[in-house]
Amino acid sequence: MGGLKACFVAFSFVSLCLGSVSQAAELQLSPGPNGYELGLDSQVQPGVPRGQLKGPFLFHSEIIENTVRQYWIYEPAGYSPETSANLLVFQDGQRATNPRGSLRVPQVLENLIHQKVIPPTIGLFITPGQRGEVYPDDLGMSNPNHRAQEYDAMSDRYTRFLVDEMLPELSKNYSISEDPRRRAIGGTSSGAICAFTVAWHRPDQFRNVLSFIGSYVSIGYLAAKDGQAMVPGGDLYPTLIRRESPKPLKIFLQDGTNDLDNRFGNWYLANQRMLAALEYANGTADRRNRPGARYELNHLWTDGRHSDKHAGAILPEVLRWIWGDLID
Image (cartoon, rainbow, N blue to C red; front, side, top):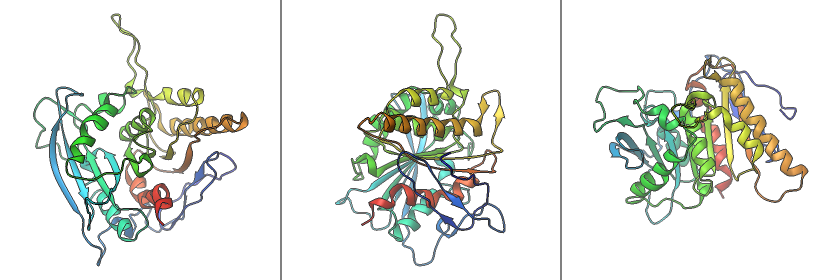
């Protein structure tokens, strides 16, 4: 881990330790009195102009056929179409936008934009698909039934849906930067591996990945059957990363020592394998003096379980790290 000490502590005050692009930095947390609490940046603050969370809207995809999904759009206060905005896409939009949930992503954007520590940003929050023509009224925070097929697949189908269908839909009403450094994609659990897959396939569209408790395990694996070839799962990613040249991606990884351990894999070890592979790819390129991109890395290992709570606690500081260098 490049000599960086492990960090298994709770949220109160956050500071960011930045390393070179060839060595992962580690986000540092100090213990708080009540565990992993949401900080002020995740709560409504007096005097902060309110943005608008619009939706949910329904979308029927032609690329991921026979599915319907909901999505929300966060429009920051003072948004003007005359200036291109940053873009944050977040999977499992029903949870990411929940004002009483662990993530509260629109509220975090609102506060950080007001503080001028990240640029004005449009948020796009998308649920997984539900098979059929109707999105059930009673799903609430539960997962639609096509989540694993979309989020845990290593193919580019979800990427094409997002880039070729959802972004053009968003661009009908919003001016979004075409600079991939100003676009970020994130999620938790299977939503995290989904975010990584999008950036892996299309770094020309998204250069920033926020991965919390990522499911880099074998959920997407399908055995060879009836003449159909074996379909790999996300546990193949560390192998691919080690064998390919680094891509121009800025990646944050978080997981907890008490994450899941089941027939699909061990989540904590899987995330450690991801970080080790990304560092290996950078180190190999450095040793061989290869020109080109390097992964820019940051991470946090906590003592958490398979929960969004740690993600919510550190989200403001992660976004500062992702986009802080774009502020003059």
